[in-house]
Length: 120
Image 1 (cartoon, rainbow, N blue to C red):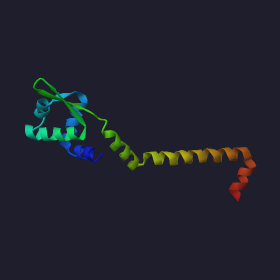
Image 2 (cartoon, rainbow, N blue to C red):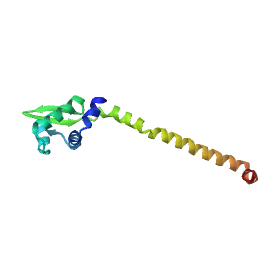
Image 3 (cartoon, helix red, strand yellow):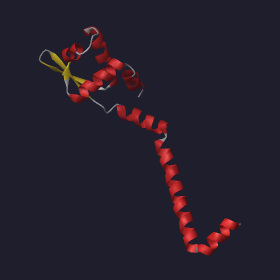
Image 4 (spheres, rainbow, N blue to C red):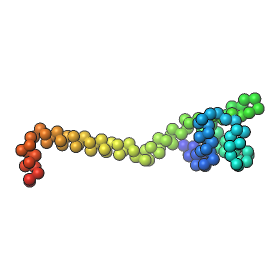
């Protein structure tokens, strides 16, 4: 997970991943889309390859890169847990259940019991 986090920390590498999401590209095609040098792009591709986020295949004299998003799963799971959205959803579900239970109890006791509660 740490290698993946380091790999996606750089904006150039994130842009490369976005490009590869659309289609597999050669190293040359990727390099043409940046103002940085080809060796710099090669270093970024090596980091992405070492983290497992891209796979490469030699086709003739060209190296074709493809996105492999599977290594992102542990990082996504960790971030989701950190964000706590599931925890809030459980709390809100519990609150909703309690509201419905209270309404149901009040209805079953009738209007006279409800008036006594409010005046006490």
